[in-house]
Length: 252
Ligand code: SF4
Image (tube, rainbow, N blue to C red; front, side):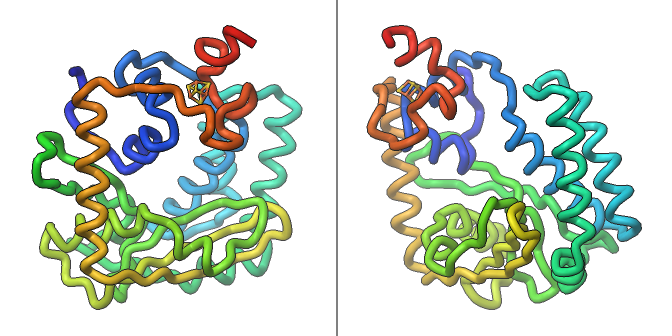
């Protein structure tokens, strides 16, 4: 099998639709990113640049957006390009979002802010490492990530996320001193340009459940179990599955 690592996103994709996992990670069928994905990615990169070195967030956004809009892998036209650029500019220059971002203090390691920290999780009986990148470790030594969302998140939505548990388990394995098993979600809304900092809390023993889950996913991959999962709600549709034409859409 031509893969040398797993990641949290590949594991959750396998859970959502094993056939889709096979298209992406084994058959490596190229796809084009959606406008929404490209927008979220450019906002994410601009925030990280700003927290790394400060400066004019509007100018940083422009540089990051130009870079993204020149990417051949993204699927949008000139009109949406301009509209999305403008939306990002208004978002990042809104008082609430700018003030919120200014409250975030990255931790420092070797005189560098800890942003996009690579972590590797080893799971018993899984021969491949599970890797991930944590958006930020803040000065209080807690990990966190940046999300762009149409609407505000609720506390319960933040609490249901599993990815933070993966990051916390990996940091613990790497000997990072965690003051508590908590994770910061920084959410920027596209609708009303709001900023939220939600904190989800875990118990250390929950990592045993995480390890069991990863082991079971690996067993499925290793055994070549790649069934279609059309019950995975909205994701199995022409709009949201990039492999639709190769799979369910072929018979529609
Ligand atoms: S069309 Fe549906 S079943 Fe097929 S890969 Fe996409 S999500 Fe899975």
